[in-house]
Length: 185
Image (cartoon, rainbow, N blue to C red; front, top):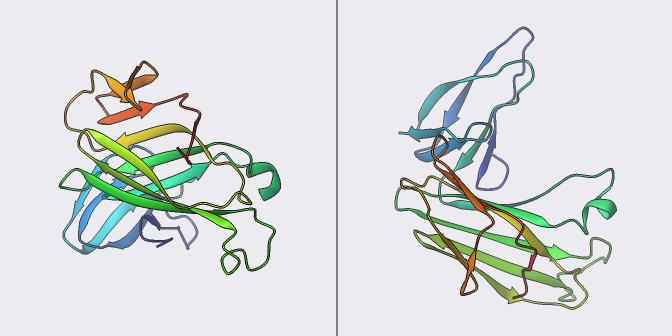
């Protein structure tokens, strides 16, 4: 497990195309296909083609992501995307601790920003629980909401209709794109 929302199930032996992984009780999603997996807390067999590392996302979690670059310094100014994986009750929670990446003892000096994300059917919110002007501006570009049962026909962002979205019925996923919203708002 990496944190509380991402399970990495690497292949550790040669010539292996499947891996056994213990999957804790709950709702999980395959990272590559967003296929839903309902676990009763048992060992499962995951396909592991040569070009794919099995990754699973826990339902009920929101994970901030960024496009990688050659260094963390070059990655830092890039916008965030948020992966929202609904649990069985159609809720998800997550957070983001964000500092300048250079200051030693940034937490102790209170030189960081801390955001809390909440999602439930029909609503997503981002709250800035702690803000520091020393932390770089954090922008969210895209939000992907996985685990929807019904198509989404309209999206409203900060009280205004927003047209930058697509619903993928095969993945039961809503992708909201091009937001460019500061997380401080």
